[in-house]
Image (tube, rainbow, N blue to C red; front, side, top):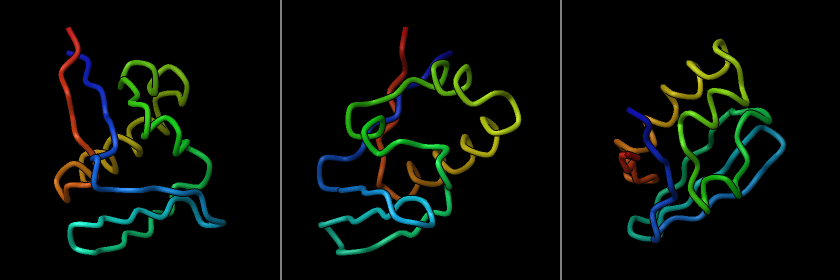
Length: 84
């Protein structure tokens, strides 16, 4: 099953030298993510499907990113939606 990841409406993300910086206005809380250039903040704002990310990144980088995305969902920075 494919899933789509999208930034929570109360959260913001921006690119920094180390990767991505997430800000949650509900907390407020910050999360510094050493993602290098693997993820584009615009993809997370608009919503990006796992199948698309996997195709774009390749299997090795995709598995690394998958764990990161799952942690962001658990912390409330991202929403995960099933795609039929």
